[in-house]
Image 1: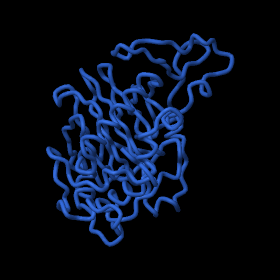
Image 2: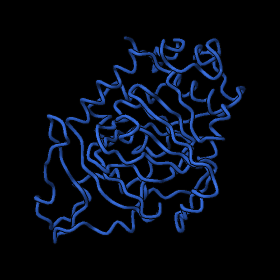
Image 3: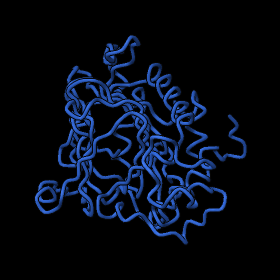
Length: 309
């Protein structure tokens, strides 16, 4: 399968059999990627009213299979365990395994090519109704997260930039936590996040997910979380994108750095290497199980850090 010129062939295909239909119809510019003029297209209103849109129609089965194969390979070799609670999002937790952009870019091929595809951004612009740009903060352009232990979650949070495209590789059934929740049209105050007033003043949309799903999220104005899993596994690739208005924002990135830092850089120099241990991720492969640890062997206070999906 050729990926020449940075344009992935899935942009040239219509909606695959068995996927949800395009909200714009099978013969819209989504299926004619090279001819898309994003700024002339009307956005999918669900991005405003619900905070997300399912977009599985963007990629046929063979592309999803390539993404899944590469993601499974990367998570089996480069997963790092993270645990923490983050003050900037009201103390919400992030127990999970993840793989950083650096490892994906070095050892992967499909995911970096997909992310940099102009055709993919053009297709997303049809849904967004505006230009969709590469993330101006490289460490969060594309990342992998995996939830395997009971209680693992990507807790309530917002993102710094406008959009996220999430590829669902594996997901438990809904009764085991196989869904996401979104509260649209909300604002993030990092100094005083105040999550609970949003829960009672806005509708909470819950969306069941299955392996092979994609969804596009208006992530800076949608408070969202992955419901805690109680069985099975949730494995996803998250690709972050910006709108033009984001380029003028003055943003700090401590929220992202906390979750996606290099474990070796984050560990105090005087600490014993035993602060990083290994344990099973619930699969045949083993991976590094790491969390910020003080030299005394107890977790560092998470109060000065935060994260986003």
